Length: 169
Image (cartoon, rainbow, N blue to C red):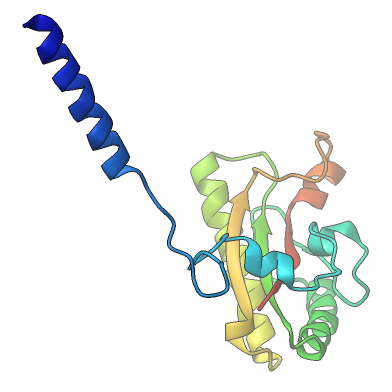
């Protein structure tokens, strides 16, 4: 009796497992609807360095720096942003992500907020220069993605920045 009950329970468990298994539905061309979420990125021909303007390898697109605990644009930053605006307007097949960064001083929460203010400041200025706001997104990394791990004033200054990362449209 126990063997029969155990056997019946195993058969039911197996039937349940098989009926609940996920089967991907394929389209006429054999592809899965929705497909790989990264497929659209892979099919686009992007020849830009994934580090964006921080890499220094994208001619015409520059990282801008900020003064300590500030989100206001310096005169030097405004000049670089004029060049960046031209680059963005010339490269219609990309959206640019503006990343706000901070040095390691201050709390995580404070630096995330400051990084966001920096990215918004840059985006707003770019819009005033005629860049379509739909072609730019912003994100704050706060102190999470430093480019200089040093503790000198110069190292901190390099980390207080807005980086531009071209993304496929």
